[in-house]
Image (cartoon, rainbow, N blue to C red):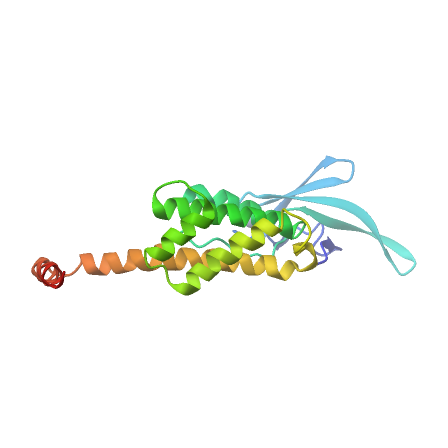
Length: 216
Ligand SMILES: [Zn+2]
């Protein structure tokens, strides 16, 4: 993906903010911070994008252009809103480095899955054993597949040889979606069911409890 911009975007007073959380078509306040490095502060989110200026050849003449250094553009999806807070920074870091190093992103996503398993089981342990335990507790097969895929691919990516994710960056992108799928199935869906169940009339819940006692 090209990160080079010639005017009108580069040096423009207004353009689409490159921060994915913002993206507003906003006024930009340019400032020079080094010889050829400039920042553009977004009036909408106050985020400062960083640009390196260079001369781009157009025909026989040159014109000023800029390369966006920060934020790094990424195609990786955002984390699921229900991803526990203490795991969000690992996910976000994986997004930021995904374009440069799909392998590093995959290793970080494996760490996310490790932490998710700890979170779901309420204890720490070996990731492989933890997934086994979740399966025993009734984890749907598609979620188990997602967990194992991120676990294995993330691990292979730090042991060079069998799988080089840098050759297949698309695969790293799939891992982001799998982590989100795990969150949807293991956190969001059960929470929703709990919420709806909790809103049933008290006497109905009592009746259900009596029924279940009777069938045990
Ligand atoms: Zn912005």
